[in-house]
Each structure stands twice: as structure tokens, then as C-alpha cells.
Image 1 (cartoon, rainbow, N blue to C red):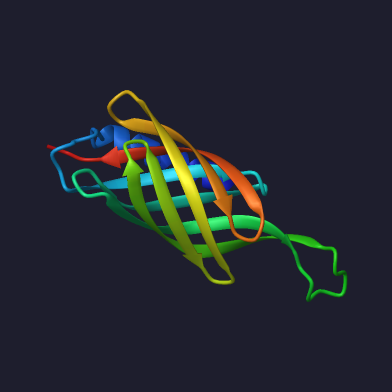
Image 2 (tube, one colour; image 1 turned 90 degrees about the horizontal axis):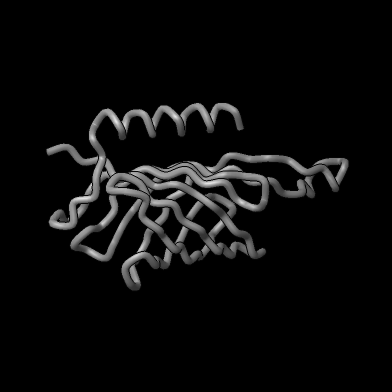
Length: 145
């Protein structure tokens, strides 16, 4: 978990150096995000966010805890990292519908974004992958003129 926080801070610093900002006249811009989820995990992603387009696509990793039923101690809770692809569709400004695809896990989610200045948005997520979970995250856009 410490590595994820360090990586997120480095990504935020990088976005600051590159003068990340929201450019509404662009079709797509590079973006990155980090969120903490209620299953004591996180989702860290990078990809493209649609500005003129309603679509977005991100790849990254998801960490989550689950009960490992294959171990001799069937109630062992283990954390796992999974590669993840997320495809999103903006329903209205600030509200997105997403489908996440990862090995052993598929999920659907709704995210609600709130802008913080020109560079960053904070968001909340309701996610369902067999259980209902919630997440809080930060997303930043990378664009340089």
C-alpha cells in the first residue's frame, strides 16, 4: 500500500510539472487516477479521458482483499493485485458509467466527479462486482500546450 501512495504522489507531481489542465476543446486527453476502495484496496489507472467525446479508456491495477477458498485455512483474507481495463461513458457532465475488466473479476460502476481547479477532480464511485463497494479518488488530466 505504501508503494501505491508513493507512485500516486509521483504521478501528481508529474502532472504538476507538465501543467496538467482540462482542455474542453480536445477530443481526448491523457489522464491518471488513484482511488481507495471500501474493500481495503485501491484502483490506480492511466489512460485517455474524453473531452469532446463521451468515451474514455484506462488501464491500470486494482488491489482488493478476498477470502481465499483454495487455501487450507479457508477463511484467510488475502490481498491481490490484478491488471484492469476500464471503459467509461459520460452520461452527463460529472457522471460516468464504467465497466471494469480484470482477471477473475468484472465490475460495473458509476462515478461522480467534482472539479478542484483546472487540473484535478475528486470523485466518488459506487462499484458492484458481486458485492457493493465504494471508492474515493483523485483524477488529473495531463496536457501541455
